Amino acid sequence: MMVRFVNVMAGLLILPSFAAAQQAPSGDQQQQILQLLQGMNDKFERMEKRLDALENPPAESADAIPAKPAAGRTKVTPGWQIELFPYGKDGPQELSIARAHVPIGELPFKLSLKDGPVSNFVQYRAKALFRAASSGKYGFRITMDSTSHNTRFLNPSLECVSQINLDDREVLAPEWRKTDFAASGGVELDAGTYELSYTVSCTGFLEKLSYTPNKNTIEIARNTTINVQVIGPDDDDFRVFEPSELYTTGK
Image (cartoon, rainbow, N blue to C red; front, side, top):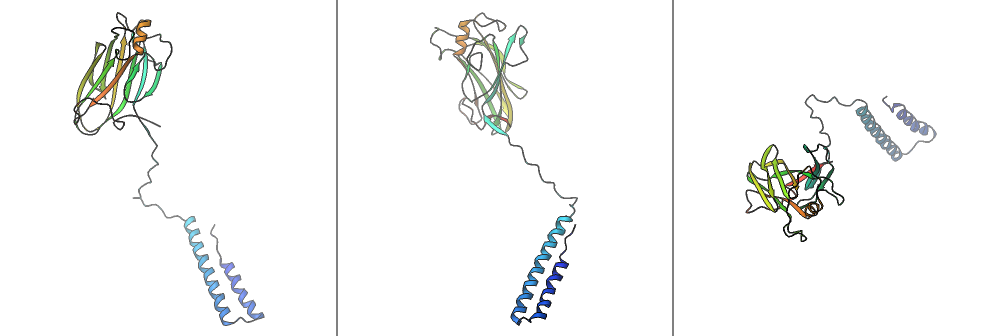
């Protein structure tokens, strides 16, 4: 309901008249009273205008642009999101037994993501977002190393199958190789962001993925590393990913 100040002003105007009947003020005093009343009147008018604006807001134009909702904050973390899937008789099972975010660089392949007992061979599945800064030819290489970290065995090795994909494109086809090895594939890319993923599975000599790993295989696996690298249009050789070009996102 609109608030008005007419009665208030009328009351204030009566006061000087009553005072004049008692004692006539001087000319200077009358001028001061008039200035005071004028200032109060201006203040009341401004208050009335603000109240009118609150009670009767202007109608929005049909062409008015709605305000954009606040953008949700997205956390960007360099590295890979990785999951481990145990093997059964028919291949990798559908439910992963371990998940973790791992940094860029060498990743220990120990058939688990934490220290502890191992009961199954597993498939490592890693994925991240890859940002191609410029258009051109890109290569991706996966390296498996079983020897440099292991001194107990004369020639420690595993039999491994690995694959690299970029979105729906196969960059490195799955193929069995004996460690140590480095395998790579290339693809032509436009500048942009893609999902890069790789899988790795390894067993011991004469063992199948559906078997339970023996103690020697477990020890060799604990001292084996995986490393995935990139070579871009301006690179001379394979290199470690930059934190700004390989990352995961989340809330």
